[in-house]
Amino acid sequence: MPRVELPDPVKLLIGFYESRVDADVYGGVPKPRPDVFVTVERTGGPVLNRVMEQPQVTLGAWAGSKAAAFELAGSLTWFLLNDRAGLPLVRRVDVLSTYWDPDPDSKHARVSVLLQLTTRATRKTS
Image (cartoon, one colour):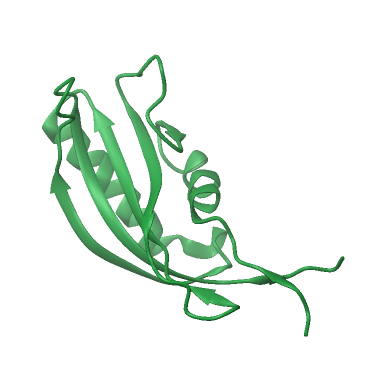
């Protein structure tokens, strides 16, 4: 049986969004914190079998205002649903929720987008 490797959904989405949105994209909240940025964090999801999984991912659209955060979140969703050619290992995208989620400590405007992806593994040739 060939060896396979499931992709890291955080790395996939960071690479995907870096050339598509007008904001820096991180795997967590950077220090120092810019005014506008995007976070991508895996927050759960099952492995279905050795070649498929359904990672749950939360995108954070951080901006200077509630309206700007919702606009950024909308662009994140739009690219994922309409320009997915850059994600060949992603077989399905479900947008589960988009919600106002300001940072409790700093009160920085943030909108969170909860996703469920279906991804497939790649064969390892070693």
